Image 1 (cartoon, rainbow over the protein chains, first blue to last red):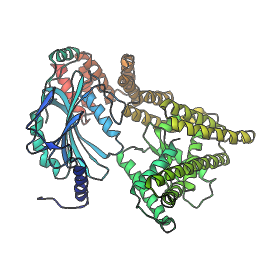
Image 2 (cartoon, chains in turn red, green):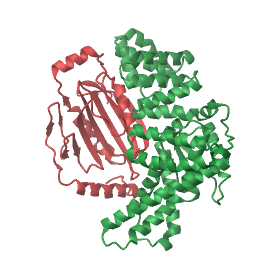
Image 3 (cartoon, rainbow over the protein chains, first blue to last red):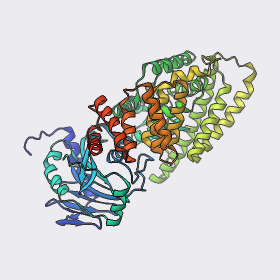
Image 4 (cartoon, rainbow over the protein chains, first blue to last red):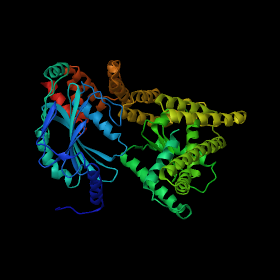
Length: 208
Length: 369
């Protein structure tokens, strides 16, 4: 790997990645070209693997400890792991971003959390937000994440790219950007109109 | 009570990393070194998470109470250092290297210096007696020297022995802590109020196991305090001035309100910030946090009240940017774009580097359209 000096953190990444890949070997499959769910669709990066769960779809090329894309559509009523906060249908994008950020801040395993960006973004054609943050995981490895989120009438859709900051984040960023650009969100038209009438609609360009 | 959880959690953490076979006699000094090193690492982790509250006046006050108590402890160990962690949960714990951590959540529940002194005295005993190290040694011996043939049997025996040892350590910390408290001139009668208060909090949280253990300790404590009540002579610094203590811990109340907001614990955030405002009614940030609590609780009753709190913040400090932002957001969401506009403009002017600025620029653009 050009430009990569092997040192302790890198060895740690490989060891943990090997363990995780071994542990997760069963459910991983080759990702199809297109992932379709009732409310969203996305084009998978070429050659990536897919792990489907009831709550989310995960894509990874080299193993989830090195990099992954997580796509999730969850009920607004669903609580968060580290806080008692809830997302509300009438929240502004940055209020929703704050709820996500507070949950991250409350994660006891995360160290040296740094907020690199919090900004408006168009997510699948809808006004949402983008967070960029980095942190140190319990193994001392610096991790970086780009987190897109948008509140839909009854769902919170989020798409995030997380990777080891060193080497992997930049390496697979173009693949993530392509996947993000391919995202389509389909919402029930009646619900959407109701929401537009209820809250001010934003017209904010993606700052990706 | 929470310290017990922390002893256990600390030990569990250590056990997860422990090497499989250690002979107790030969390894004891190494284990102590290891415990101290791990304690330092854990403290570093707390610092790196940004949850340690750094406030010089609060630290100085807590340290003065700790030193008054420490004078009554006969030990060669150096005096403990008291730190505060921004966490709305009720926590107090002592690391084996002498660092005692109190959460803002427990400080929020304490009513006077005597109660604070009891918590510190209790934690000091854990430190002075090196309970964590002793428990660790004991667990090593119990898990390897029971003579039981199967791992699950050894584990069960180890857990039972550990529970007994922890109970004994807690009772010792209560007994000796009470003696230190009295010797330092604090009022021991406040201990029962403290424990009763903590018990109510645990009951509210539905922590049934912890409630049972605390009830047992309260019973023991009642018999001890009842025996000596008549001879008590209190010289607490809070005598005659109930607000003295709250003024000293005010920074912790503010921090607890913020931490409780982050966790979505609206009731505790409201309680902390209301206490703070009773002491310092002219603090713009406190009124802003009160407004945030009312707004984010989102129970339908707080919308208009929160506007009042934000406006109070601006009356006290017209250049407090977050109150401008909050008012702008409220008016924007209600479709009152013309009213929202000057608030957003003021916010961007006062806090041009705020992380939310790009959002606010977008909303402002909407208002102008």
